[in-house]
Image 1: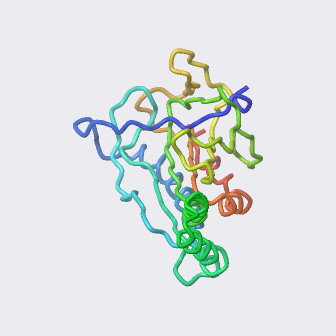
Image 2 (image 1 turned 90 degrees about the vertical axis):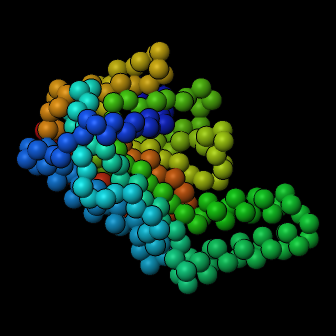
Image 3 (image 1 turned 45 degrees about the horizontal axis):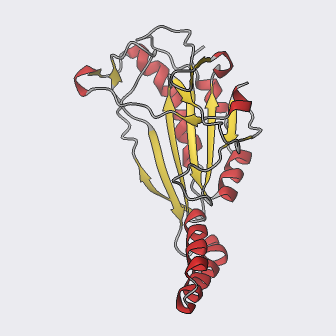
Length: 237
C-alpha cells in the first residue's frame, strides 16, 4: 500500500535548544553504529568524478527531550557533491553541454538555452539528506508519477515525480529503512505515521529516511553499488 501511494520525506523539525542534552551512554551506544554506517555510505558518494562540496554534520549531536520519538537528535546528515574540476565527467558530460549552452545563448535560442542549462545543472550535483527516527512520511500521490525502485534492505524506495516548483530534470529519490510497513495512514495530515516500538526518550533508532536529489545516472549508480543493508544492521532491535 505504501509503495503504491508514493512518498515525499517529511521534514524533521529541529528540537528547541533549551531541551537538548549530550547523549547518555546508552544513547551513544545506539548512535555510534548508525553514524558509522551512514558515514561509510555517504563517503562513497564521492569519487574520481565527484567532490564533497558541503557537509552539515558536525559529529557532536545533542539529543532532544522530545517525547514523541525514541531518540531525536539536533542534526541530520546533509551533504552536497559536485562534479570535480578536471574530471572525466566534466570533460565528457558537462563541457559539451556548456558548449551547447553558449551556442544557444549566442544564437538567441533562449528556450534551448534554458533547457540545456537545466540539464547541465541536473547532471552537475547530487545532494543527500538523512534523518533518523522520522515520525511521519508525507505522501503526494494525487497526480501519480512515482515509481518503485528495487533496493536491498529498504522498506521503501521510490523515484518521485518532480515537485511542482523543482527542475523536472533533477531526479528525486526517497529511501526508507525500518518497519514502515506498519505505518498508520493519517488522513488529516496526508502522511503515514510511523509506529514506534520503543517509547519516547528510549535509546533506540528504529528508522532512517534518505532523500537524494540530482544527477539521475549517478544516483542510480549509487543505489546499485553502496552497502545499503548496513543501515538495517545499525538499527536498534
